Amino acid sequence: MLILWENLLVRVFLLEVYNILTDILVRAGLDVTCLMLPLEHDLKITGTKLAKVITLEDNKDAVESSKQFDEFKSSLWVANTNNPLNFLKMSKIFKKLTSSMAHHVLSNETLIEYIKKEKFDLGITESLDMFSFGLFKVFNIDAYVSMFAGGLFSSHYKNFGLAYPVSQVPTIHAGFGDHEMDLFGNRFKNFVSYHLTEILSGKMTALHQDIFDEKYGKGFVDIEQQFRDSSFHISNADEFVDFTTPRIGKIVQVGGFSIEKAKPVSEEWATILRKRKYNILVSFGTNCKSVDMPLSVKTAFLETFAAFPDVTFIWKYENPKDGTAKNLPNVYLSEYLPQTDILADDLLTAFITHGGLNSISEAAHTGKKLLVIPLFADQYRNSKIAEKIGFGITLYKDELVTHKLSASVKKLLEDKDLARNSKRIGDMIRNRPYNSTQLFINSVEFAAKFGKLPHLNMQGQSLYWFQFQMFDIWAVILFTLALVIFIIGFIIVKVFRKCFGKKVVVSIEKKSD
Image (cartoon, rainbow, N blue to C red; front, side, top):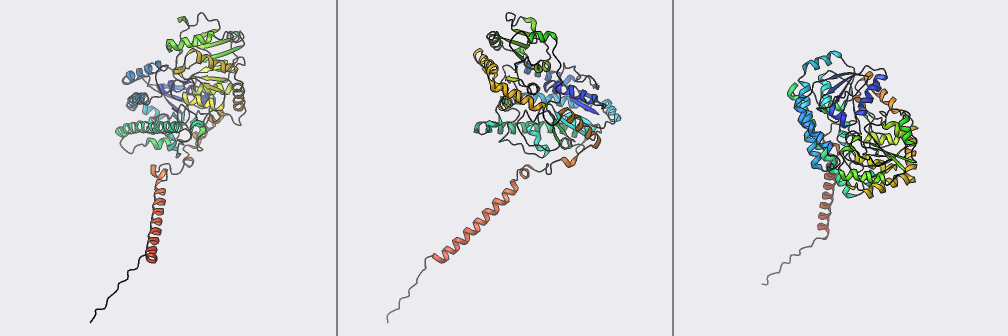
């Protein structure tokens, strides 16, 4: 089995998920080889501890573009990431990166021949872009599974013959929940976001299609059809911690399958957790670094921490030696901390997070209430999911001043509904009628055994847009209706004129002799 990841996406979109899933398959007894495609210039992580790994030399042409991603990540605390212009800017950088990577990989004939000779039974790759599905054609890998570390992108619904419910479900970039879709402004934003994503996704797909057409000739591969022909699409979305969306049998939701089983915390962490009545974990993930906070934001956090002396704040902070919080005895800084283990500890009260999908899932699985401070991408949407379920509250980054942050922490500690709902969602997930990890393994093994599953495809998935939306049917119905109305109207007018029209009497006077 060949698993194919692109390094940049692995880092930005939940490295932990791809790392763990690869090793899950190895532990299940599968022979797994992981091919890492080079995108990010300084990323040396292979993403697996147990699988065989194939790495390629750095892609020099992509170095400058990938550095622009570093600049983007360092500005997350202040950048207006919901601005469509910023979204377009990042899309352009990403297009340059993936285009450079595509040419880099396809020019490596040694790699291509090696993969062909291995005769892999199954491929697995992420679906953010579709280049890898074209590679499977080049590698002569007929059966494959697509997956993504988040939910299903709105632009991918059409590939499975589904219509994305734009009027009902917020897109990945939306900053509102599905219970707020009755507002005209939100539906308008969702409409724009959906179609912008459609356009950018289409351009990316066309770019990759052109690369394959140039290299192998037109007709060699249709990468959109390749994506449609995936045996399964495995989504890391959790149906218990998500907005409800339509799906078909080949879309398998295994949210939370990558969350490792929590272990008891070490004695060091246990001692810290026992010091005070309340304990709050503060972590903003790998990309959103606390050390990059503007001074005003960092000050708001420190002043808030000082206002709650009976709370221990465990803060994932990338440079603990810089003197931050040195005068606050209730604050513990750590460059690395066992997040899953701490979240699962009964002594932890709550979690302050950026709202990445993995963090939201871990909090839900462990029954911990949340204060979400979304910074970019799907984090705004995730915060609204936590709000809807009732185990989280949201504070936006442009509201990060001391009195607002303090009020949010106070609510996090005192709100009984948050405590009750967080416990309930944790109990629901622990008692759901299936094991998501086993479902993931079974799906992969099934695909390896039976290959492509065309009968799971939605019929009519290749219809033109006007056929998909039934516009041609509506056009015929409206034309027929208009024609019937015209004929009936014409007959009524004729009958009316016949029956009630003015009669003209012509009199002829006799001439007198």
